[in-house]
Image 1 (tube, rainbow, N blue to C red):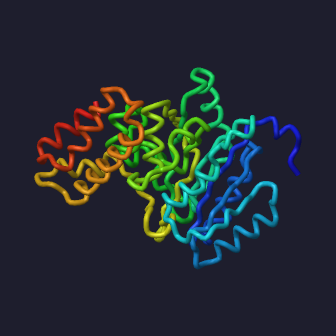
Image 2: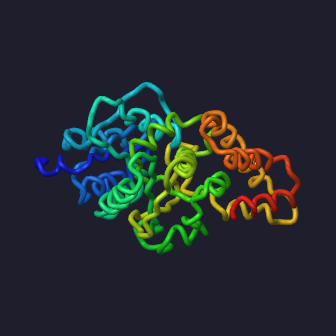
Image 3: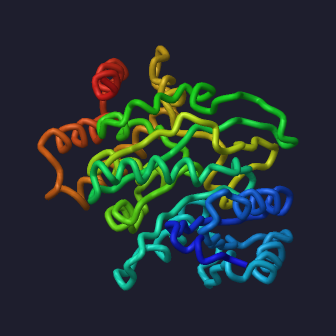
Length: 315
């Protein structure tokens, strides 16, 4: 039973798309429902699973009808980014209520620390107190574990060579430094960012771009999520693997010849930058428009020009 005191706390919608996640799904859902921040609602969407995932979700809806909701639609398999985008679109504030509702994203096979939401909300409220009307995205570090929960790396950020201090728009255009499954967003960010365009490389990268351009990216330097690595850990069918489009990936361009995968990522980043410019051109500064133009040029440049421009954008 939910106490009246809990309703004085801000409501957090935790969005969880699921695809063939039966092996670890219960453990993740339990870790979300057992958060120290009690005023939350878990909103799930099954992305066309062929295992017992849907039955597991239905069982949680039956046993926790006030805390777990299952979104049913006929859109089939959308992949990770598409399924997250669908859930976020449904969570978008409609202007009818007066209570602030925050949105957190979750992967199906991780484990949340009990104070994960509480710590992120503290950082969120502090950021909003300084700048009440801007979009804010809060994210944290993760501990990398194997299928059995044994530690692979104590810090995902260090493991991947990510620098969460690089919050500038130019840096985010070429390297996403947030991990979506740690993120907490305020209504201002959702209203600004949605819908996520088809040209976005991933939903979390698009969200980081909007926050860096128009608001704030806030990093909590604690490992608030157990980030599970296992043999079949794709989330949302074939689209999303437990990797990050990070600086480590882009370092491939520093080889003696162009690398096909790095070149493909430059092409994706350029298409995403064009989509960002198309939507927000009238709101962007001349400096932001200049760096978007630079990123759009990256795929067409020679190797050494790519090197120099990449370094300049990351300064």
